[in-house]
Image (spheres, rainbow, N blue to C red):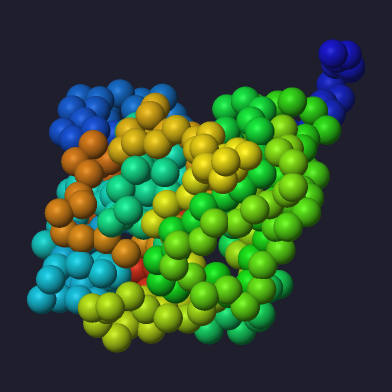
Length: 343
């Protein structure tokens, strides 16, 4: 590093009161009250940092956010579905919580990392589902222009010539099974494979869902990273769905098995599976359905409540930088938050 210094001639100027600030974040249950005690708040204010930013831990956790504990479910009698927090001022919000997503696809998250993928949990009753808001019904653009995907890290190179997919509904009617290569062998959490190729027999059209075994190649191919690219949806819903259009948008998969078919026609699974993060092959997905239930509240993803933060004085009567839930929530819940803060 080279430093140029000329007395009386600064290269740049900035106002520390504007350029530097403080932040608040989500933590485990009860930590908001302990960390943001009156004594701690006084100490924080004494540092002189003026602007405040609010960090959203629910997004890191792959969880939906009930930023206001009061709100409504899309399926009110069952206390489940898609949640919208109440945008009208009411009782002060001191804390709020994240809610685990039963249709989760990612194995890993960047919060407590104590969840798991439903794609290789060994339970054919559970399933992953993509975010219905990314369907062409909402985007106005063809699904094939913005395909959803499921990527699996097998942990090491495995001999692969087949895949078994247990589809839920909606299923993909047009999809491709691919293997990935990277120009450099980096940590996948930082860098994805940048070269993807379709297996010789990996392109599928006019599919019908259900249980499918695909012979991807005549001879096994040694690969570590595999992906299923989902191009078109059946737009069908599972039996018992309540008629919400979001039930039939996107894609849903119960279980995926990558492996090889031997000379005797036996399929040998190359993946690890189980209902624990460390017991399954690592799965990454393009999106996850924010559908959840009242019982899915995660007490260890606790966010400071908006009213508590503004009442504490931490904002120094300046505008705070506040996020809205985006990746694992609904647009309606995000819009309601904005209306609440404006009110």
